[in-house]
Length: 123
Image (cartoon, rainbow, N blue to C red):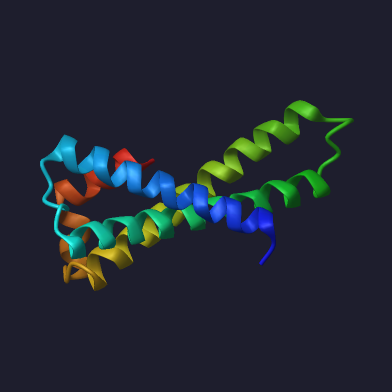
């Protein structure tokens, strides 16, 4: 693993810890036990790590587009593709997280206003 990858991982870890603290304070969550805290940091690492993969998508779109000839079209394509990628990513990660970490059935996940609201906040 390169030094740059380690730096990115460290940044994601620090952001995950900070977000865990801020969200737990904001929503009155009890993550001050070690297990809850570690699970929330792990969630942040998974979301942050998977979203950081959008850099590959960015490089792909720029390689396939003629950014010099059509810069506006390329930027719009980038915005749409990254938005779609992150949307699908957050929905998949949240669905699997609530199913396998919190034990919800899939049908409960998609009917729960709280889970849907938390997913929208992450966007």
